[in-house]
Image (tube, rainbow, N blue to C red; front, side, top):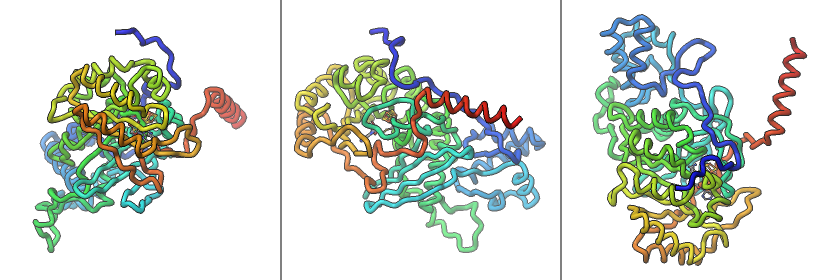
Amino acid sequence: MADTNLMPIAGQIDPVPTARDITPREDGRVDLIGLPPTRIRELFEEAGLDTRQAKLRSKQVYHWLYHRGVSEFEDMTDISKTMRPWLTERFVIGRPHVVEAQHSTDGTRKWLLQTDDGHDYEMVFIPDADRGTLCVSSQVGCTLNCTFCHTGTMRLVRNLTPGEIVGQVMLARDALGEWPKGKMDFAEDEDEAEYRADSRLLTNIVMMGMGEPLYNFDNVRDALLLVMDSAGLALSKRRITLSTSGVIPMMERCGAEIGVNLAVSLHAVNKDVRDEIVPLNRKYGLEELLQACADYPGATNARRITFEYVMLKDKNDSDEDAHELVRLLKQFNLPAKVNLIPFNPWPGANYECSDPDRIRSFSNIVFEGGISAPVRTPRGRDIDAACGQLKTAAEKKSRAQMDREAAAAAEAEAASE
Ligand code: SAH
Ligand code: SF4
């Protein structure tokens, strides 16, 4: 294996640390969203409940938070009336702040969200006949600079916290009206039939929004563990897919510690082209990436790895490329399917989407090679919600500009003293 560790790549690629666990709030209260059940219990004990009470109350609260989706302690009807203000004084149930909600003509919905410290990020819901997929962001911006991706033109502002990640799923359930009603809801008109666990709109989650999830591994893992917890949101790991541009060192842990389906943004079949369009390739090369896929825990023919392949005109879309793709996937004996993504344009992009005939020919070759290769229908293009179109106001700034801004801020601070 070539030692590529020391090779420079464009952009800053190191994970950026964020405050873990509890983000301090001005009012001193603690946001419970994003915390695992054991941590909630600990916090209740620290706030003065005895062990038995803390255990019982945390279990009840957890159920209300993640299974029933309530956002006020007052609505937790099996918790005593005196206990509810005690909770409200000390804790909050956070949701991402919605700046704007947009609806595409094809039914796709996009939400512009904001963190408490004022950073914008996005999530997208894509309804289909047989499923509804929520596309979740893991970072504000991205450190990687894939040349065809709009998010890649942003600078990385910061990693999202577990609460901000799982909060997207909770917000989507709020918006879709999908929290179950059930035994713990003491409304007079309660009807058990309204417990609609099997006919939900939101059935699948893809970590394919803004950011590289494997550069925010711990927070993404903690959030997804909450999403998968059968006592809470209870989404099956088979319905969750994490997409990576190829952060090899984290792939094994992703399989072992999260266990969701893996999608890999391959996009090219030779070093030169992949180095250019997915610059991370200069650090983690193609062959090593495919080997890491072959080693991915849980990859079987029943749970194949998805290889995403963006169709860029005259860049990566020839018949030879398609044949080479088949050869590579076979060489590594990969249980694979290929997802061909027509390039979604954005202002200032230097690429064009391949012609429909070209895409068809490419797809046929891969298919004849024995690998399924559907073409992903672009969704929500009219509201810039399609793959690679997500971008919020944080511009990618040059190092020099960031230095200038830091110097100006320091001067302003000095002047105000
Ligand atoms: N950072 C992760 C996940 C987010 S991107 C990754 O790169 O895998 C989700 C998918 O959209 C990736 O396969 C990405 O390469 C693709 N994509 C990015 N920009 C695109 C564009 N303009 N048109 C089509 N697909 C794009
Ligand atoms: Fe980041 Fe993925 Fe876009 Fe590449 S394609 S810049 S890794 S979000």
